[in-house]
Image (tube, rainbow, N blue to C red):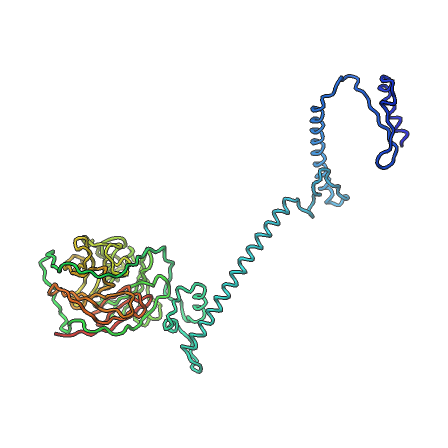
Length: 493
């Protein structure tokens, strides 16, 4: 009603107009943007001489903010009611998105978008890994087909087994996902020997070097003479045959190890009972027991002994019902009774280097190496007094007391390993050369050493253990995952 609006303006502005006496200055008539006629006027304050503009603006802004907040609360209450179907919801005067279950706030959309992007990135990563595994699976399949063709020619109907991988020089423990695929594909039968994850390794690798030290001398630690050799068939080593593979370790823990038989067993064990320790790791405690060598070849132990104390490296032996070994990070020796399953003797080896002071050339903390021959139990080591030369001591197998000691002129770090036959120490020239030699002999009867050149084959080129078994007249060795045996021939005087 334009007339009513004009009347209201005149009523409100009448006193001011009369006070000023100039209606033209206070009342203005004009068209607005839409073309409608509008009247505007100005009314003077009857009580204020001037207006504090800054304060007024601030007050108006505060009132506007309060009004906006109140309207927002009202809109929220109205939105809740609107979900029940009371009517269309009005837009928020502040410009915010309409509230309700069908549309999220802008912040929620951003969170959702970021989550989607993360999921897409994760999906892409898994797709790339899937492609990589597919390529490795394809490579494994081709390898299996190649080995099957080589091992089982067409028409034989055979299935490639574990020996096929050995003959091809394939290291199952380093295949990763391929190794798991191969295991599922061609390793039949019950599970293999118990496996465990090795801890971080700190094995050392040393280069071989040969140095001659002053002539040997007997250490007068006891008054006992050289132990009597009861076997009339004893003689000097004349020949070492080709290695025969009797078993293979399937995990990285078995790259280095020691396997043994007792030449003088105690019931219920026999000369066929075979023992094995995988020595890669820092807490080596598992001793695998096999009823026969055939069981060793299949990799299924009859029993697993858990040693009360961890052992160090590959120098252990089994003799007269006990496992003799070096305690980890110690110069002490221990005897583990295989029947009682407990340590029955423990003794420190005076002055012996340990944990990398005087190892063999391949390293592996082989500072202390036990051995057995026709005459009994021995230990090979070195001391600071011997300046790194091999020291050889005869031990009491019950108490581990030293009966007699010899110091040689063979530098321990210049040879790869050693073994004892009929009271004579023999050393191997290299742990990695395919055509190594038995290069030195030290005779405890005369206290003298001599050079040799008896061929010795390192078929797998990482020899970590060699021991002589007097009952079988063979050398037992561990060569890069493989448990092998060498026939030997002795020359009689």
